[in-house]
Length: 64
Image 1: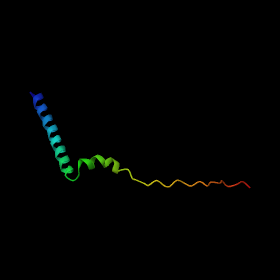
Image 2 (image 1 turned 90 degrees about the vertical axis):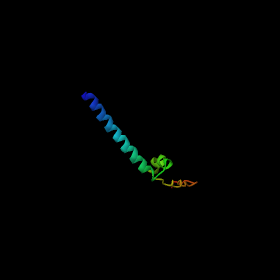
Image 3 (image 1 turned 120 degrees about the vertical axis):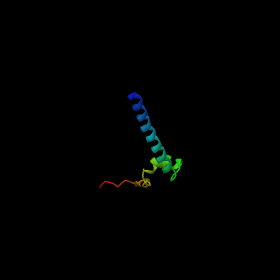
Image 4 (image 1 turned 180 degrees about the vertical axis):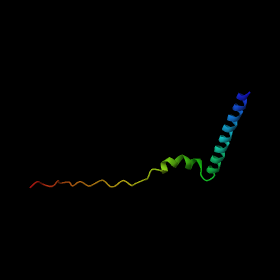
């Protein structure tokens, strides 16, 4: 009979963890939208404009 009590205890703990995580996610999602959350990994990459390509002279310098 201790196995049944242990099973109920473990399932109650897992249920409590699930409810706490679900409530925290619902509370956090009020401040943002799923569309914004899906783009967050892209937000971490800083966007730097590419520098213009260096201009090579048409005529290389002549050797003395």
